[in-house]
Image (tube, rainbow, N blue to C red; front, top):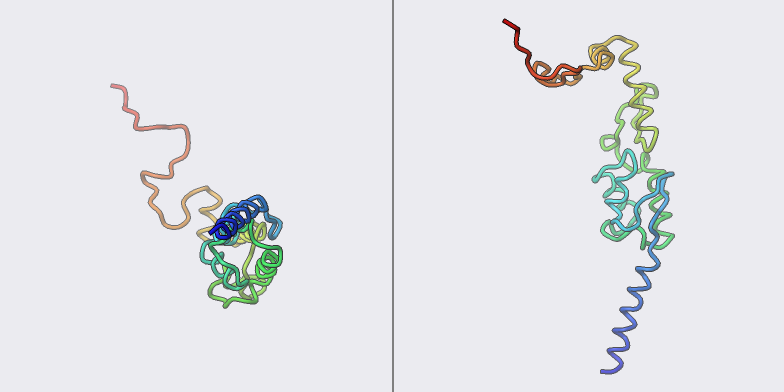
Length: 165
């Protein structure tokens, strides 16, 4: 019985040591991820990665999606990094965030600042060709068919003013 308590204490010490060994910041794709969160939640901090994409990345890199990313050993974190770098070639075209790139004609998945740059380029292209959506973007109005009679108003006027009698 004394041996069991020593082993139990040893098990508790290793858990405490593991908590001390946690990396609070894990660098993936030039972004610091929160090491206290699970893999699938921490990966959503990357631009271009949602919950589904994070789950796919953890599956492709053969890492437990519910494990803390800060407590993972370095080889597993390296596998996650490699999976993020090669994600576009590992998944089918329909799951990528840019299924048809206008300039290259191929399906791509964008991460980080590339997402914002591509969005700005798309809006500028719509403005340049003077399509309906481009004109709405230029004038600062709603683009996707929302109602504008009572919402989306800009300016300093608040409420309804009565005419003076």
